[in-house]
Image 1 (cartoon, rainbow, N blue to C red):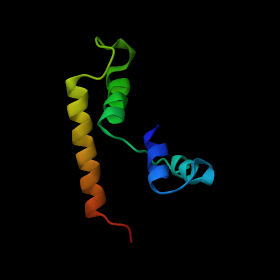
Image 2: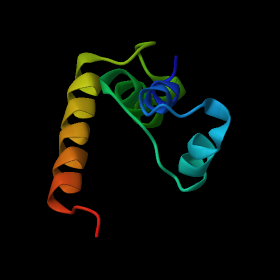
Image 3: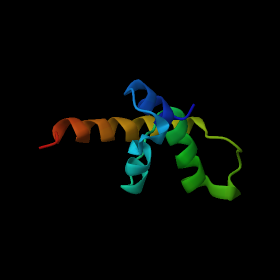
Image 4: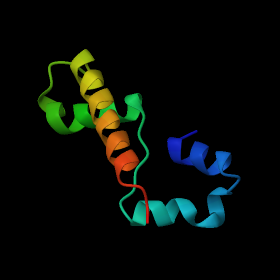
Length: 79
């Protein structure tokens, strides 16, 4: 189950409700350490990487990015 599917399920919303597509259409994304480290690996290491999966550095960067995003969300609550 994807992060988006898990979120929709936890909210009691069905996948066909349109909420997931609404989020995607607005550039929203859900990330945890695994998905963020994979994204970092794909963007910054690319196909020329000397390792096939996210490294410890990719995971550390993922956790730092997630912490920063959480800090921004907490310090800028919706109006």
